[in-house]
Length: 130
Image (cartoon, rainbow, N blue to C red; front, side):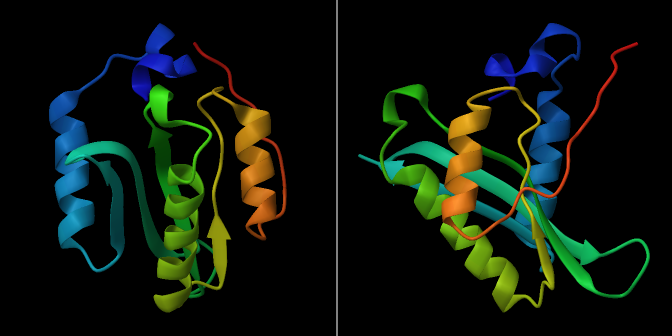
């Protein structure tokens, strides 16, 4: 995912940091790591979490990323992961579910998927690399 994203241009990748985040999400009740396998190989994943909003005690779910291996895109893996995350978030008491597209990869297609799953576009993200 990192290699395809806009982050690969200017942000160094830290495998140890990613592994630590994955471990934390797997072991925390507030974390979520989902995978899709085909022929005993992981072909996609979604990582997310749930926390109180900064201004209230209401719970908000968020995803760190959703990735499907390029050769498996266009099938059911992405929608299944997103649906599973939405169900997980609802079961864990989220009053709000946020899923974003910050990588610059397939923004339109991913946005259409999120819309089909009942999420609404609610804002824009502006960035500046320095």
